Image (cartoon, rainbow, N blue to C red; front, side, top):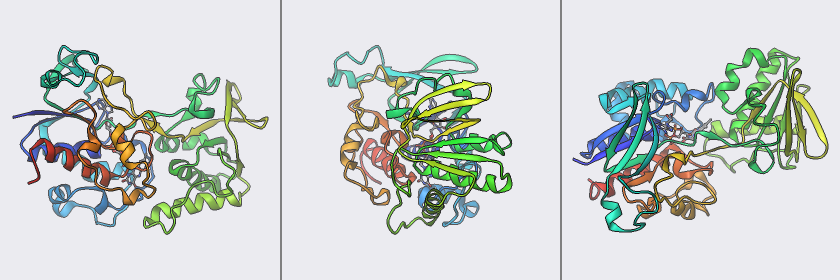
Length: 386
Ligand SMILES: Cc1cc2nc3c(=O)[nH]c(=O)nc-3n(C[C@H](O)[C@H](O)[C@H](O)COP(=O)(O)OP(=O)(O)OC[C@H]3O[C@@H](n4cnc5c(N)ncnc54)[C@H](O)[C@@H]3O)c2cc1C
């Protein structure tokens, strides 16, 4: 029986574990935090895709009568409680939480040894894992890396840290859940939101509600472009929840109420933390002081754990290189074609980036894409579809 390690007990990792177990692999899931750790940081934000689109038929069958309605729009924590935890429970001891994968390599080989050579690919994978019990080495024949995109991008100009940004870290949040956790600190204070994607839109909408209840709250929304409506809308968006958030955030930007200032073409050139807050310098000789900065400037994968694997990472997306090429022309995230097994190859047979990590910096990833990746990879490994 082949030993298959899944890194990460997020929605895609658990789909992978469930399907690979059903196809006869000896599966172990290694999760550094708790089940669904990333989704637990979304706070009150709802998935804009309905439940029926977010999980496979396998998961629906497993949940049976307890499955949420097909059209339910769950928050991240609800998805964890109602879906991921029952799936993890069904996998029993195969899911190990509190276990971080620190490094993966080929047994006794560095990334430079016998590149592309079948002798290299005969070697098993060796993983250094760390938990409260200490460090140990695990062996695996196959590794599905579903560890997500857990590293926030910098808010500074060009995606680099702005001078002073690292020192101001205690005043900066990157997750919607962390912003919500600070509600009592933020109410009636000065908040800067950076970014013009869906997370920034969610943050501005959430802060608008907070400002209604606490009228002295002041929010500045800094975006790089000049558009009156900064968040890109999908024409005739088939996902109404997404359209509603985007419209509301854009309406606020176009006709800012008293609590909101929109700074357009605002690149962040510096931050200086002081007793009165963090002073932020923007391009165009602008500056202002804030109590909290919500930097919603995207997330990137952590590739430190694969430094000794010769993996083809896209220089643009930081995800799987052939997948980036295959998806480069796709503009509608609902129209992503099913990936071929070749699109998902990393150059290290048996090691795959799966789920949001395979997309890297591309924000178009949807859970349904992760499910089709899992099926493509596991079917290929198991020798065809059943
Ligand atoms: C606010 C927000 C809203 C979104 N809304 C939608 C939506 O409506 N519909 C949709 O389809 N998609 C949505 N997405 C995109 C995507 O579906 C999610 O990001 C989803 O969480 C990706 O799942 P994943 O399993 O690939 O990664 P994750 O959920 O990030 O799971 C990765 C797991 O790996 C663990 N891990 C990381 N490193 C290690 C390590 N070294 N060792 C062990 N474990 C590790 C983490 O703790 C985590 O539990 C949204 C994303 C965000 C941020």
